[in-house]
Length: 403
Image (tube, rainbow, N blue to C red):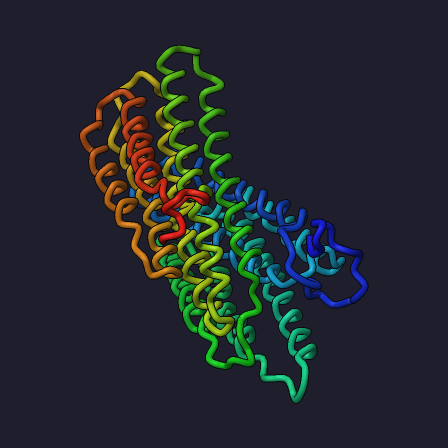
């Protein structure tokens, strides 16, 4: 993972920092799987109550889950994931995250602490490890006195305000809980906005571009797989028919094309651009293009999963407006989030991707009341057109060097 043959030599230092560029470790994958399970819990809960009040609550829960994951992703980015301390902390956070995920349905009930307390534990474990890594990093700096712990300390201090808001919200009943958790979400964004800026060139965010891109890419691909599992689980109880077969084919085409739109060339372009960002600006760039932009992107996968679940349960019935809305919003969120990420790092707007996506999502309004296979087919056709138009961006294509 750090040597030329892809296998890292045994650790010879007690440093918590990775000895060099590292790929995603198995303990990180384990951690990610639990968080994707939490996202599927949000998906199932939202599909059962597809109305505005429940949708708003689902977005709040999803934000808290996502923010806990993205904070820990930043924490583990420079860490040596073979170090026993890093592994123990990550496994403890994974256990807490599992309890949090299994308590998603309780978040707005009388037992909200079963969700809130594990969430806070995950965050505290991540913040504590982040502080220790930052302190170690300062002692390793060559020459002169170490700079003050500005960037990470500022982030930890500001993050504590959001954690307090989550705990306070768990002790009150909705709708007060909803508004307090909205405040927690705002405090999280403010903390990221302030701490993401690194004005001191001696104290930038310690972040590796390849590792951060790989973690987000793995989360996307696992979430896409989970969306198929959700739809497949619903289909397992249905009688086999040509309608169900056509619906499955259209759904698989959509998932495959979403995968293509992210992994065929977009991910590598984004990673290369992120790697080219100056270290002092990398914190803000990673915050915007990955931590913030991938929140709606993964939310788009959730939207598609909800729509697919509803359609598979009724493969021959006319599609109702909520399922069409979930499909349209999900597709739009996924694709426009990629457009924003690309613009943020490369300052180029993927105009065909944006325009075709908006036209496709808008056209879905015409398919309310149609058989489920047709709206999924329209989305698949729209994504296929995007793929065809963007074919020149593929590595090895004669036109790829021009971008």
